[in-house]
Length: 72
Ligand SMILES: [Cu+2]
Image (cartoon, rainbow, N blue to C red; front, side):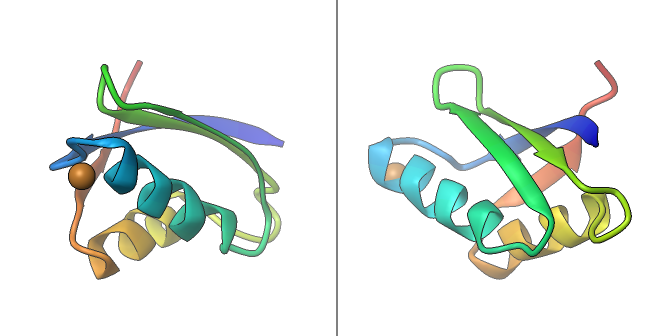
């Protein structure tokens, strides 16, 4: 398992957070997702043999959020 933090722009309310959570949950291989609306990030634990950060960032882009991998 790998854990990453994705910074997400434009996530402004509970509805956005729910959309983000659902988009990440729908990714095959995503195991554990924690969203912080306040800090504008998502923490994701995933199976690196199935998926990767690029797929998550792509899935968020597809629903209109600019997302970048955080280095910390
Ligand atoms: Cu919103």
